[in-house]
Length: 185
Image (tube, rainbow, N blue to C red; front, side, top):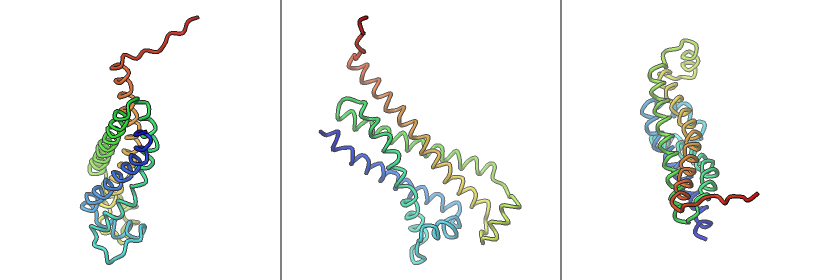
């Protein structure tokens, strides 16, 4: 019974964690390129000019990422059902969420570091961005790379989270000394 009642709570938690991640992530992104928000994302997400830019970046982060939690939860919450005990189920799913979060942060940071190392001036792209009134096209592209890498990290995190769930399942079976029944021929 606890297990069934926890499913919607875990899905909501996944959405909340993803949304908060997006809010914090966008504070880092805003520090790299405020123009990514003021000249691109604010229009895309219809953020009013009366909202402070930092708050606007947080609002964009929430709207751009809460749904990723639902997507992640749709994989990890049912997979956690492999674990037999109710408490074990909840703890396994929470651990899987933390694995997704860690993977997302790691891949995002790798994406940012690669962008810093390899995103140099590009006359064609920079001219297009300057035509769109972007003053610092390199920083703009680095921020875009960070955002893209974070979405990739979230997707890879699902697989890492599933591995975490399967590991918990195997550990539980080992603790319970569970062995499949041998079939007589």
